[in-house]
Length: 176
Image 1 (cartoon, rainbow, N blue to C red):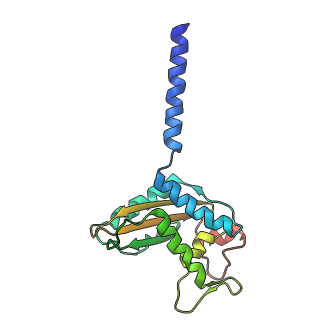
Image 2 (cartoon, one colour):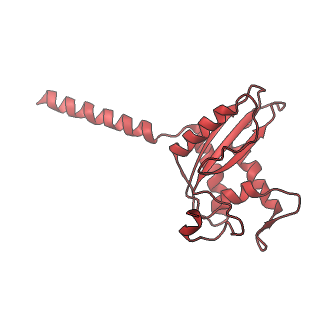
Image 3 (cartoon, helix red, strand yellow):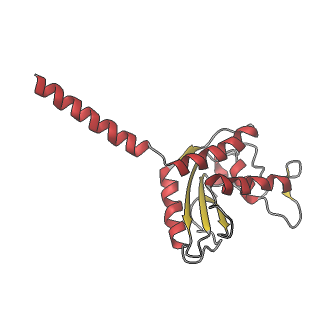
């Protein structure tokens, strides 16, 4: 009987460890998620959940850019934000730094006209604010030039031309 209890306890413990390991997210992942969700919640939008499949896609793509750190999109099936920070600063760039750089684009976005100021970019910001997006996954890597490269993937993708990021859209928008 004692051996059966020990076996059951051991089996339960292994299951717990496997479940913990597969659901655990790294400190960088937590920082990415918290920075995104802080901005979304401030704007009255639902929080993202963190998705390891998206993070894996981001990691694979970031690794392909390690030699050049080029801000070229993967053209994958998700929405995507890219960031590059030079290595000339005293400290390395953090996940929060990248997300905040994208969020700062709100200064150039006019919610009333659903447009960006002429000559400015705000697509990173609108992707983060895209109401229909539910999941995010990101990767941070270092380039050979010692710069920091960040990729975040969003599902479903946002930035459908002509549509506001702050309203819910019919699902057909994403199938066309």
